[in-house]
Image (cartoon, rainbow, N blue to C red):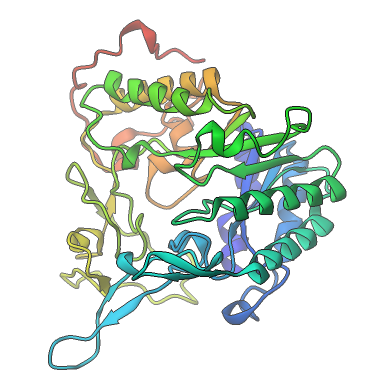
Length: 420
């Protein structure tokens, strides 16, 4: 409760409304109303905090997309599902306590069923798990579906990794019926399963005369794309090409449920706790790790330890992801403030042309301006109204990047920096 009560307050929600936010995506776990296993007892108070969140959003005329972000046994095998499934500790040669783990070769979305990492097939489909998810949906919709701020429902986030498409399609259809039963004109937002965004996969799920209040969620992070070039035009062209290629071919309205201005995979623990699959394209910026705002509960890291502090995965580049000398990773300083502004403006242009709603991940965080809506607004990157002078943030102070002369940009007049 201390974290919930401290990190998001009335003032924070109000500040988002003042910065143009019309809808907030609220990610929750499937244990919120139906706790199980390790969540029994440790998530008490979650429902009352969500009550507060809906009431506060209504107070400031903000709508809510309720997103079931984590599912029992993991819908994708990632830590963002609440369970970075199938982790094994590697015992050092000669014995002793293990301090290294492996994850990626064992990754499995066990929500669907038991995934065999040798045969690369599901040994069976766990329909009881799928039905559990629908039961959770019903309870959530019964509790909050009639709230004035309730605007949309997303049944599962990023279901992927050897998904069983027919099972997922049926799950979506059954979940939508629950939304129709318990809410009045709320949107049903289904995730495209990452790469399975081709029209033949999703356009046939609902008939053309049965598409009311259905939207498809696709996530776009340029940080994970490589080789898009050094200029803002290169990055802008990538936004336009990628998004238009997919969004324009889907018959439903498209919502970008997650995006950020990050240009590299540097954000601290972005690929999981001391883990990750990709090497950063550019040197990551090092900043002082945040001090805990929950000091009565948390013991701070040893800021004098040379590091890299473990435990850690056996990922080849993992040492770059760990805390060393009290320093945490932040996004690369490769692109200047001017370039980031240009990329941000053409990203907004792309959204306006091809999609119906966007959600920058996150509303706020401790380090990353490119992942923080409020900081990105106050730095003049994504603002659609002029930022008051007293509210403007200093690029160097916020990012830890030294001011540099603007890099060469070929963006030209197509990507104006005036307010849009």
